[in-house]
Length: 481
Image 1 (cartoon, helix red, strand yellow):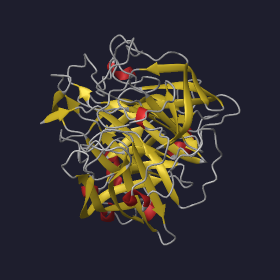
Image 2 (cartoon, rainbow, N blue to C red):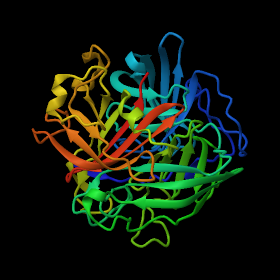
Image 3 (tube, rainbow, N blue to C red):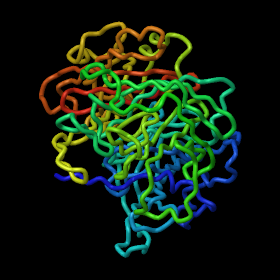
Image 4 (cartoon, rainbow, N blue to C red):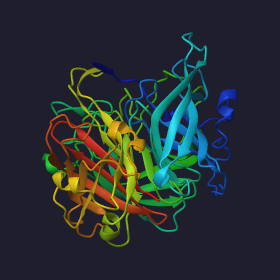
């Protein structure tokens, strides 16, 4: 199996002088057409919300940030669409890739059914054509106030979502903690090409102070670390500068902060060569999502050479949370969650443009924090005071569960919170049960990981990154209702 990287830096294509909406897109994209480039106040009261999502993995049709539009009806049903601004056929402007309906189930889980898929016509510049479809198996978890969430389309990896409805406006500096969104690991762990992630030399987690002044967003005191469990120096081989300044303004994906700088291109067509640039969205409740502009180009002045803007995460970007003001471990361990478990896979590094996949990536809907802990959980790991049990759903199908909870074949033990770093657990342990769908070993095992936890509008969020000697793992959980 061969994997081919596509040039994927979209951010220079994000800022446009006009909002280009096709007739197809208008049916789904009710919000998200940018106006002024100045800071604005969010007044969204509609049940329709647009979300910026970084590229993660699995999207063979497009390898750029995406825009999701979700409309929730009063009867627990709704619609969604998935849009790119870098169409594969070379056309300029937005293009819906897929659309369909949603149904809200137990604990707020949104089950998505694709009813239309749009693919290139085959003629360069000939637009996309619609194919009717009926494809289940996609899921989303939204924050209650539509400030963000998580989505996993069938055949795609989980993507974090953020509603970047305004530029961040902090009255004082806000400290964030973040984890990298990993992509394939390099087999020999000696190089990191494009968006491959090397756990020994590349950023796994870190922190930054964010200061805002109008459209200027400054990331100060940036600290980046590799995974403690894999050796190395503990610092990335090519760290970010300790202070980086970005510009926030209205773009096709919302009010996004670009690093370095915000700029306009008059002809944002596919295939154009641009330098790497990070696109960062921050939601009204504090959720931070970064796409680091992974590309086949290179960042000037970097040694070793980088193929992405390294302001925060490596891989394909980062997700972050405001640092809690106090220890929230007890609240985190005592809550219930919905989310996704993502195994990023591993490739051999036999070339820049093509690599052989050794361990395929996987992405599964998951629940954690059983209301009544099943006896089968003890076969995964022994209970501690800082452990939560969870796991996937049989056949990735939540209807196989009678209570909204999946299998008990996974566990996260946060361990001791790092001193002076509320919400950071750099010595966490992840346990994978023998029956977990992506466990090919046939036996239970564990590995060390790093977890961050925080609160978004009073609800807990947990983000985890780790490496089990064969592939990277990421876990994204949001407290369920």
